[in-house]
Image 1 (tube, rainbow, N blue to C red):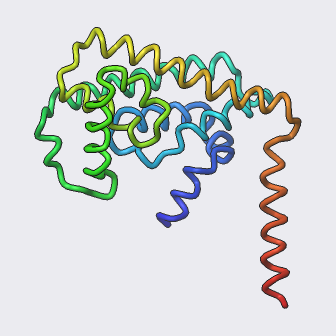
Image 2: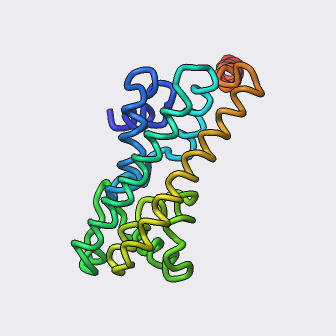
Amino acid sequence: MLWDLFHRIYDVEFLVRTGGLLVLIVIVFVETGLLVGFFLPGDSQLVTAGIFAAREDLDLLTLNTTLSLAAIAGDTVGYGIGARTGPKIFTRENSLFFNHKHLISAKEFYDRHGGFTIFIARFVPIIRTFASVVAGVRATRYRKFISYNVFGGIFWVMTTALAGYFLGTMIPNIQERDSRRDRHRDFSFTAAGDH
């Protein structure tokens, strides 16, 4: 059951068809703000959502606006969590949805890049989930944090969603190419197993 849940989370087409834009908003928010979303498919979800927008299954302007707001709100919540818990968060034990090693990696990344980490981390899976928390723990000036947060959130969502959108407009039926390749691969494995 857990494996099926993880499979469904990475099936962006299924997510869009069943939950629409609301599911995408929740995933972006959780991945960027709640410390537990490090396994969520942020970048690939945004590219796939852009492809859906190219097919006119989603409105591109609404997609970019709402997901940018979700990314900004997520990082703001993450900053608040870090500011509230302070350094004691670094003593938190591992759990199913929290990996201490990822938090340490984000701290080391932040130590190297400073406040600009909030912008850069948008494009670095796992670090994206923990960077705003580290900024809160380190008591980064909120004004500095929010400027990186807003610019980074908008830039991340727009570049990845627009990449998907342009792929979707330049390569007709791009979403079907993966499923055809998967069916071909499944057939190849079945045929190989029959011999």
